[in-house]
Image 1 (tube, rainbow, N blue to C red):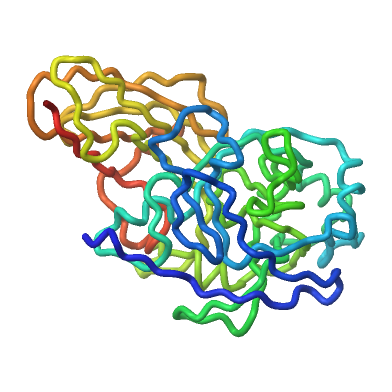
Image 2: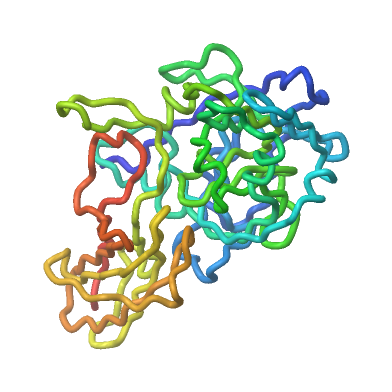
Length: 382
């Protein structure tokens, strides 16, 4: 497998919604020392997974996924519009939003392509390893609070989230000119308490790279649903079929007669990843070594994590650092005493509360997304 393969998405800034203040793309601000640069413009940064330590990841260590250039936004004149198949059209400033009952909600986000570098054969897209994931405390209001105020009409199906960021993609399939990044949620998911409209992260304002001044954070779903620089919510009475819902961030299922159908990427799949030891690390023989990592399970909760030091022949249950919380990762550790010199293959797998276990092999129907098969960490015992 050629791990050096990289594809840079080509993006250009474009005019935003005509109803909003004139905005321009901001220059990328590389203020995240120690991060892995997967792309410079637009900025895409990965947390080195070996640096995992705290349950909450600081903003400067949290992965950054952007499809277009970071827009420059005047927060004082910013408006969030809620419209479409609703009784009450809303146009709210940040000050207006902060008058609603606030919430601080811990949620884990994972990029839908996290782990893509481990796919064989290599596929197009940003070549993330394990670090396009993170857990943070998000400060804002439930999306359902705004929807209750807007009052969706009978027949409402989807809630479309759209950001200020915009541009054109020239990869196959190309976009039909400049578009905004947008994704939709079923109305029922949008009204659940884990769907947040956030202006803060870990007690501070969002940074520009993380969506300042406003973003969605959708617990249990891959990060493409957590639209950054959010300025428009559109309630629809028909399923939304935008570019990032159909052409991209989609995969196949075989539900009718085994024939493949395209559906949008949604729920995070159960996954455990090893932070330490790292690939090709040397581990001392006959001395205890703490194998360490994190696990997460989307809309379910982590039930257990198992670790193997012999390539999957035998498994031992790891210790969870804390009681697992819904929609959040949990750190885990396993005490290993290697007794034989030579190569060793470490594996970790997660089982969620539903009984779903991380699979051994990759499902090719998932294309370049929802990557949660076993990934070995090869080490040398000496």
